Length: 311
Image (cartoon, rainbow, N blue to C red):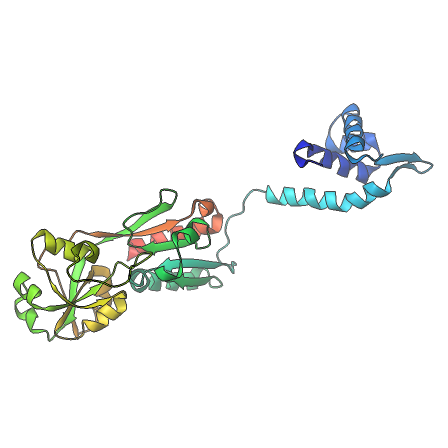
């Protein structure tokens, strides 16, 4: 039997007929005419190759096949009704949902702490699963397996929804005893040793070469624009490690400013403006169109955007 040839309204008629055991009462139940219900019964008999209802001394009685089908049909109708109910608002306070986020450690160190603090207050039973860029792929985001990815993206598939959470400038982080701070200009910057930290995007390649400016990213592209090059001694894919390495008074870490400001209250660090112009970067949140209209996801991404606006 080809289900595409079945009028699903017949299931509603079948359910009413099996409940009422009477064509007239079934018609009244569905607020249709008696001839229309009689026609539905005729079509059901042809479809099922079964009388469905037969007249007996006790009135109309369901056949054995109709009685066997009745619970399944009723469940199908209930499932359809439930599926088509208006979507209820997301109840964050009661929810036990798990939200999965891919976040670079730049996002993790700047955005996620205040986000988690707020979630503990407004949705204490929600769980957050935080993954790194190496844990997932764009396909995972596209399929809705990951609720969102938060990172510094260069290019994105057009199918994704996206929102800029903030724009960030750059800052230099180094140990407060670093002698270069006595005269922190471009010459002093270039004479120092530097730690490079990656963009931490999807599919980060293996190995880095200090002379390959096109792969080095924002800071080194800005230096190349003024025909300069810094002395990179350490490459890392981790912002936290870059900040720790900058505690050496011979090392400078040039980082997005919000990351550097994590150490603003630590007197052993000093944060200064770079002695050259570096274009601002954008932290973006991306998500699948499959999740775009889901109430829980709408609530979550609005919360993320609100917290980002406060950072």
